[in-house]
Image (cartoon, rainbow, N blue to C red; front, side, top):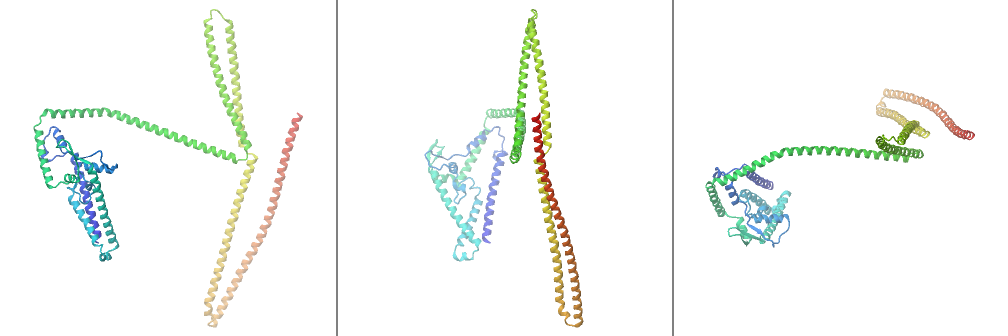
Length: 548
């Protein structure tokens, strides 16, 4: 129980110390946020000159300076340690080690630190007392682990304290003291001097408090005897600057709102563009997938010649469309050129109207007649091309709607395979059902026989004791044998009926097989006759063409 209580005490002191630090930091924050003042500072001050003087006097003072030629580690932790030592805080106070004499929180947390140290020392004492041979035998496994952990923690703390002391000494050897009272003279810093500055005793603290009170009184007298002109001018200037900045902030507020709206609009436009790009990417992926599927189907298809012919026709159609577009553009360009020439000629004709140039008028009429003929020819060709394209597309649709012989054969094969699969599945299911029914009937009969045999075996000894029971037992056996013979005769009749049914079905199956053979033979003959018909038709067409 003692280790658990010791651990709880340690946790209690740690939590109390942490809570005290948090409350102290919160109090400092609230004091600086709400502009609180001490009782002797609660007076009507018209300027911030006294406050500035007070903050200047009691600001953080740099006590030491690291020389340029000093040797130190170029790490972030080493730079932090050297900065803290320059302002008078030792490394032991930073790590919270034993022997801490300096630091900002050493005086405020003295009770918590001493209590925590006493608790830790009690644990170490308990570990040392338990390290004897007699006590170790009486300790539990948890207590032994706690004692070992305490020993390791004490050793680690001692090693850390040694390393910190060595690092502090190495940093202090490369520092120099800043003595502002003597005109900025530089003196070499030492460990004893820093310890005397950082860890001041009670006498030094009392002297510092007295100096603080004297400085407060001097500041108050300075503020009361200060002239109003300079201080009020500074306050007025500060207020004017503040008002100007607030006014500028208000004037810039609409621009800020406008810029926010513009940014929102740009964000929405960017989202729309992103959606459009994603949609186009998805459409492109779908198109690529469809193209790959079409290529795979083309590779696996057996109509490669037809597909090649269709591709060539599609390419030819695209070329004709391109030629049509180029022809239209050329005709339009020539028309514009002729129109410009016609306009220029008309202007020239109007200028030379007084002279009466009949040759130019005749030439213009010929050009107009030629232009009308060319346009009529172009319209006829365009209408003919449209009719031809329409007839080609109609014929292509009709051809696509009519299945070819290869497709019909494939459909027939697929339907035949599907029918065979369904028939095989049906036969398999029928076999399983029949097997289950047979096994169930066999199980029922065997169960009945086992029950009957068990009943005969159980009642045999009782029936053989007396004559009446013996006769009754024989009568029952006779009845049982008779019922068994009857059931056997019924099963034989059922078997005979099923054999007859099987013979009938076998004969029907044989007749259907013969009919199927005849059907296949007729189809084969029909196919041969069709081939002969096609051959004769082709020869007849060739003879007809040669005769013509």
